[in-house]
Structures are given as structure tokens and as C-alpha cells.
Length: 495
Image (cartoon, rainbow, N blue to C red):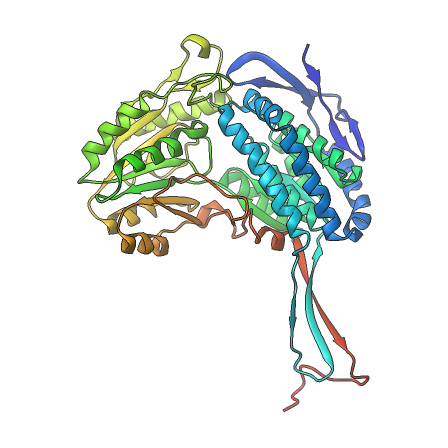
């Protein structure tokens, strides 16, 4: 019998006020019911925000290093439960166990980094223009953070957002993706076990319209951190602007790997296989485009098709599986729609192109690794995010053309170039329009201590990860201490 899970609101595990629930199923075997979760609404969000608001004053007054110690303990618990967390993550979203182990490890790394930042919430001291006066800035928490996360990294991305929010002294209302509620619930359980006071963290399960929208619109939520589609991100930005909320948006990508004629082709092949088909292409940083120099195009395509055709599909918990399922049937339909669009526009289907239902995959949402060759820059499959195991291959004749083609999308998240020419590499770093550029590496592979995010349609300028995210979760307060014992007038012509 499957387990019934609950929200955590006001320091208690509770059902949705409506009593309604939704199912969480294994995308590799849709017959496996993992559990049922609350289908919440605005009233549940209101209760969660009330809880977070009540807890804020006491939490903000706890010294930041002490808050960091709690996050360090959460990381320790995650380490002890790493395999259990990862196996359940594979069950509910599909990617292979090695990848979910990496997802969990990313959360552990983020915990330890966040814990140390509790001692590094630096301000500045600067000279005053007046005598016997001291000037400084300090970082202070903002209040209640609304955190809305996707399903493809159900442990890593919530930790990227929630650990910094908590270390900085904010309280949290957390809406995880409905496709991965179990990993999110486990994360909240770990935070509570580590010592986060009960009302400081609240989790509200449910859909975007019923839970996400009330979080964005709630007047007592001070800031929003969202990872998801560009369309939803734009609507969040518009809605939040009415209340002058601070908003961080991590949105879509159409990432490309350039392979120049002087590249190490074996290395480039390993990179594109991992970047395009790891996580079944369901990453915002996935390699969706391959830009090949014409001098190596034919040879590399032979290598690529041969290698990709050997990738094994199946349940991510089984040894030897390279590619797991899509997260749900809608994702399979989206991929099928784009394969049709690509071929109708003139792209050549050279591998895959169909859902996969053979053997042990019969009851899951699998799709073959798919390669579209002879794609041109203005085709939709060269410009629009697909979010599945589809690689569009474009032919170019020069480095300058490669950079122009790479930049020819509304997105700008991740990018990659394979070349042995150091001058080309640094020119690419300068000229590629992306928040992330890899040289001789695939487009995927974030590190917890580095800023993560993109430009153009990929976001609104804020970054996850690294030191920059701590600036997002805090306000700057400027402080002047005048110890002259007399009125000194700044902003008056004293010269």
C-alpha cells in the first residue's frame, strides 16, 4: 500500500485544507505508485506564510554562524542517507542512479559551502568624508522567501535556494514540483532533524496555479526564487512587480557545443553524449545543439551516431542503463512534436525519433536518443528549448560563424567549445552570449561554489550558487556612526 504524505505548515505535518491529493508515480514503471501528496491551494499557502512570518523575528536574531551550523548538520544527514535519497529520486523522476547520487552530492556540497558562508556574510567598511565618523554596510535578511523548484534536480536545486535563504536569516515557504514531491519532503524532514525551527521551513505541495501563483502574489512574501520555463518566469516577474518583490528567475536554455576542426574529437564525443543524453536531455544546461566545423562534420557524425546508438535505455536503478525515462507522458509528447517539426522543416533524422516501449520499458515514458542532422540556424529545433533527448546538429565553416550560430537564440545559459587553440578559446569566452562557458568540456556540470545562471531569456540577472546568491537573499544596510559630538553636515558644500 502506498504512503500518504502531507504538507509541513505551522510546525506540523498536515493535509491540504481541501483534503484533496494527487499521485506520484514512477516514470520508468507507471504502474508503481510511490505515494499520494496534498493538492493544496491558496488557504494552505496563507497558513504557511503566516507560519514563516511568525518565525522570522526569532530566526533572524540567531547568529548567522549558528544558522550555518544547522545547515552543516543537514549536510551530514544527507551524506548518511545519500543512497536512500538517490534511489527514491530515481524512482520518482527517472534519471539513472549515478546521476541522482550526483544530485544528492550537489546538495551536500551546497550545505557545506552554505555553512561556511554563515561566517562570511561580509559588509564593507569605508572611510568617511568627515572627521570622527565611521561608515560601514552590513547584510540583513529580507523576510519570507517563496521558493519554487523544478523536478529535474529535485534535491540540488532546492538546496541551492533554501540553504542560502536560511543562512542569511530568512524563513521559507517551499513549493516543489508535483513530479518530485517525495525528494522535497525528505529534504524538509532533514532540515527539521538538523535543527531548523519548525515554523521557519514550510512545504506546500500542489500545482503552479493553485500554490505557485498564491505564493508569488502574497503580500507577506518578500522575495521569490523560481527555476522553470521562460514563459512562467515572465508571468512571475510581472505579478511580483506589483508588490516590488525581489525575484530571481532561472529559466530556459538552448545550449550549444562547438567542435572546431582542431578539436580532440574523442573528447568532444564524450562531451556531447553526456551533455545531450545525460538526464535524458532534461536539464536546463543540456546540449541541445551541436555546432560542427565542416572539416570534421562527416567524420564526427559517424562517430556520434555509432556511439549514441549503443546507449542503453531502462530503469535508472538497473546496472548498465545509460538513459532513463522522460518524467511524464507530456514530455514524451513534446519531444515527438519537435521531432516532427524538425523533419518537416528539412532536418534529417539520423537516429531515434520515437518513443521506446520495448521489454522492461513497456510501462514507462521512454524516448529514444534522437539526432537531427543538417539543421539550419533558423529552424525551430535550432532555436527553441525541447527539454528531451534530442540533439540538433548544425554545420559551420569558421570560428566566427560558429559563435554567431551559437548566439542565435533567445537564451543564454550554458555553452561549450572544443578547440586546441588558446586564442580561439579566450575569444569564445569573450564573445559567446551565455552565463556559463566551458572550454573542452560539455555544457553540463555545475559546481556548488560557482555562480550559476544565464543571460538574455534565461534569467533576470541573478545567480544561483557561489557567493552571489547570498547577496540575493539579503538587503544592504548602510550605517553611519558619528562620534564627533557635534552636527556634521554631509551633502553640503564643505569645500
